[in-house]
Image (cartoon, rainbow, N blue to C red; front, top):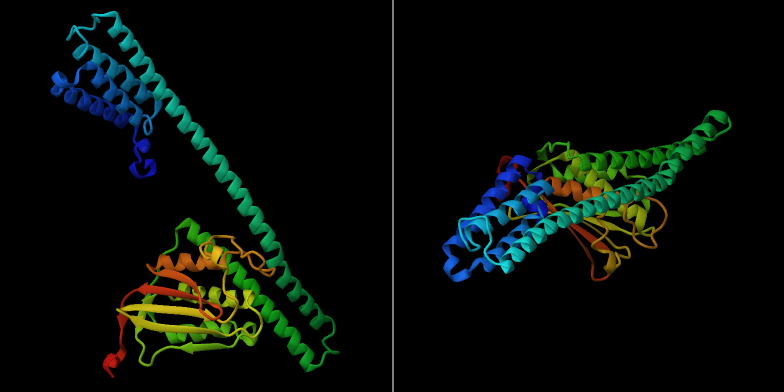
Length: 361
């Protein structure tokens, strides 16, 4: 509620004006109903109003609210009216009690809010340290492994080039290529997460051939996907969609990498594209073990890794997928398939274009 109203972000001057307007409104309302309500009911309403304002305003405007409400209540409601003197001992005690309670409530509420802010800052700092440690631990493995592979394979080629057969040389070069792709994937994810969190990147939409997008992304994983056969289903005469090609390529890359990293060898997967009600429906389904039902809602969280999953990965891939899908106005859903495996389904509301009137052919 506080974040929605953003009252605490008002300048001090505006907070003082707000206090005057609110207290004056309550006083005027009390004067209208004075005959029926009585001055004690007005005091109760004023105290309730101060209690609510104390949830949002700073301490000094709240002190003004306590003083102003007490003076106006005394002058306009406590007999004798239109005087600052108080007629009976009971009313004097009531006035003093009202002022003390209003002032203490404003001060204590402000102190509680400040304490809550301090706790929130500490929690954010603790979470930042936790995320930093998680990322550092993940990167220490994810970056060191491909770098070690590249250095080792390169050293073998340089040191034993004349002794290596063409087949051995090809295998070493293939190791270097696979490690470089893996290293590049991790760097891309780090840069993507940085862009998402900073909010500075701009969506650059252009006409996108979905079939070309899928096959081009598959080519990047040609070596990694040798044990994960892929099937592609895109209708004939499929229209062009206005999307950010770079973001779409990374979305598919991360979903494919998720299959490679977290499903057994020989697990197949299917990429399907369809156009429904002018929206692109893109899904990636595999025949693996699927996701634990209790963790389905958490898989898109940053740094989250499924319990018992194999080593490797930083836990950023699916978080980036969701971020890039939503950045283009789309949605993503995950479900386990009836027999085996899981399916990610993405829906993109976007412009479409059929080339040469192919829609009706």
